Length: 112
Ligand code: AMP
Ligand code: ZN
Image (cartoon, rainbow, N blue to C red; front, side):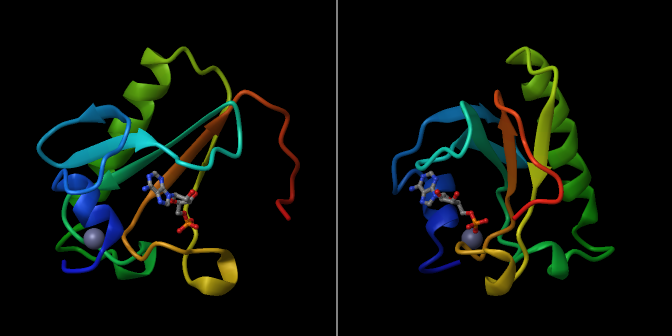
């Protein structure tokens, strides 16, 4: 999609620090890390947010979770948090579905 930051990262038009890539998903380190380990897992296809997941695209979302599990294991993460913000009030700033994976520090619950 034009003017989507994460579509441009997938296309290689904007640099990123890759963690993992396959045909369906891309994972890269967050530019403004909120934990000692903080990376994002995204589908390569443009999906606006979790709110736009449906029967036609949910397989790639499931695959994103396989990638999260694999990368977390490869990085030796024993405890981590997966977050997806939906809409501005919840803190979404990039409107291409992404899962934050955060690890390496104590985390509070409920989140702020
Ligand atoms: P959200 O606010 O939940 O939409 O998350 C968007 C995330 O993308 C934020 O944590 C940003 O720090 C991150 N981000 C923005 N631009 C880049 C970039 N060029 N490379 C890596 N991460 C980015
Ligand atoms: Zn996009």
